[in-house]
Amino acid sequence: WMSRGRATSLPAAESSHLDVERYFTRSNPTVNAILFDKRFRLLCAIIDCDPEVNFGGDPVLQKHIIKLSQAHGTFQALLRFLFVREIEQTHEPCTLFRGASIATALFASHFHTHENHYIRRLTLPLISAIVSSERSWKINPDLETDKDITEQNVEDIKILTTVFLDRIFDNERPLPVSLNSNMSFISEQIKKKFGNEVEDVIPSFYFLRFLCPVIVTPERFEILSSPPGTRRGLILVTKILQRLASKEMFTEDKESYMCDFNVILRSYAGRFKRFSKLLTDASTELPKFSFPNSSDDKESISFFENMIKKHLPQIKEKLQGEEDILTFLEENFAEKTSAPHVTLDPDNVNKSENNQTTKSGLFDKARKRMFRKSQVLQFRASADIPVSIDSSEVPSGNNSGQLVVLKELLREESRSRQQMEADLHAACDRLEQLKAKEAQCKCNLNP
Figure 1 (cartoon, rainbow, N blue to C red):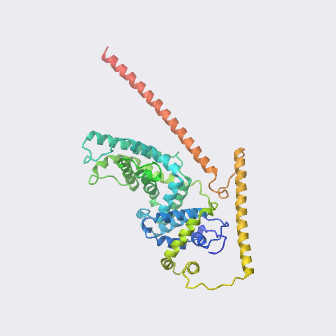
Figure 2: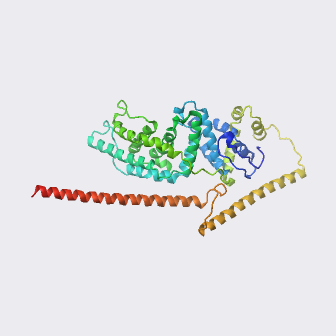
Figure 3: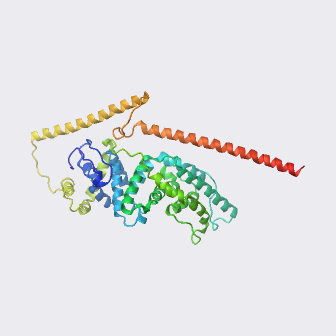
């Protein structure tokens, strides 16, 4: 299986993740060994050899795992396999996703990169409101002696956090399909092992790993172009979100000045629990197969080959008993003392060249068919001809995703504008009522 050009599908029944349908890929034994083994044995051994594996893994390793698996259409299958592996290795549900893991790091990195428009539109109003203010946002009486200032800061943080939570828990605000689908899968795997009593794990996971890092360091996720002048206000909001996620109240014995925010924790506890259903509502499933684009995988292949050579003894030790992979490693990466002279048979050389030409030709034909099909779909779309598009057959990265984003942005802007106009009219009506009452009071005082 490691030397064949045709990759075998990954059976969901055994590995509990999406099938990767058969397709032609350029014959590369290293790619086949890393990505097209249903248990990802070699890749797991490489990950376990990383000195930073207990801290989410080396960022460079994360980057090349994502890049290579996306180039060959196996990222979703790999991600789900790693989450199943992590859940199986967890003994207590209270410790799920609390530490840094490679699965969480890959999921978060991929999400923040490919769903940046969603996370930006969700967090930017809150972050801008806090960092654009010149105030210090101090609420600790030990740091700020002016009681009026601390009280005003507390009230404003309450308002900003409440508005932000309302935006998160808004049932009409659609979540990204990739987030819904993967969270639904993770939830199912958790319930299989620990039962239905751990529903709050998913929203807690979302808050702690996807939202809080963006709020605390917005410049890292390109929400802001430069670091904020002060992070105190952002940190205060993050502390409230973390307490909500962990279902803990602030106490008098530690940071007593934060106890004023317990009213928010009590008010949103029920909505936080119901948010789990919204997060795991995978009404739209991810495509089972993304069309491979292995033209940009050379750097990642070279990275993994160098890593295998560097950690070969440790990798072989972790793969004891896996004879097929050990044989592959011995033949391709073990240092040989001398290179024996091999006489090439011209007939065999010609056969090999013909086989490679045939595979290359088939791959080119497949790409041409997909290109022609995409052209037809674009023509039908431009002509307003209804068409049913199978997401498993259309290459990823076409213009349809951009159109969806643009439509969503326009819809959100329209809804926000309508809400602002409604609020403005309500405020004007309230102002007129107050003016009328004021005039009436003056009349009563001066008959």
